[in-house]
Amino acid sequence: MIPRRKKRLAWVLSLIVGVAAAISLILYALTQNIDLFYTPSEMIEGKGPDKTRPHVGQRLRVGGMVVEGTVKRNPQTLEVSFKVTDTGPEVTVLYTGILPDLFREGQGIVAQGVLVEPTVLKATEVLAKHDEEYMPPELAEAMKGIKHVNPNQPDYTGSKETDTQKEDNGGQ
Image (cartoon, rainbow, N blue to C red):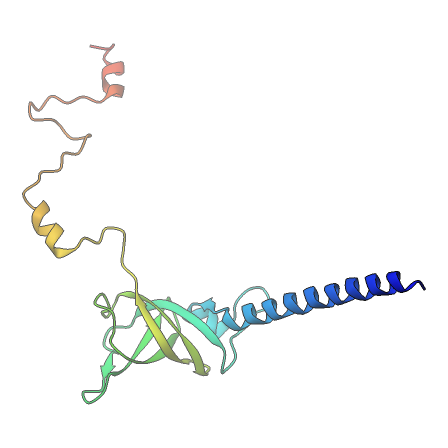
């Protein structure tokens, strides 16, 4: 082989090996940062058609409602334990830290952490969910004096008709 071709071939092969190594490192890093989302039912019964269950030591997220009467706080530390459910099974969540302001029993949450037992999650983060109708207390106070008018209700004269009613009456 000509020396110039050998040099070019070595350069192309090293480029291919370098790109393959970079892609494999990126994929490895992505798999380490993926947190799969499970509901309590999916954790116990399995997820998907093959009924895949999370294994102990796996990082994951669990979402559901905080079960009434299960929140237990340690008065000396910031340790909290509570149970989360969706429609059936319950999963225990252990958390050390300050819980979000919207956290309450009966409220939806998402907890991210490591599974330490098949039904126990050691959470590193707890997020409280709220509905789209949430309004900060200050804004709710300010809006108390504002009257909201529903377009389907009678106006102040009491003679509001919808367009379909006008068409039924011959447009009068």
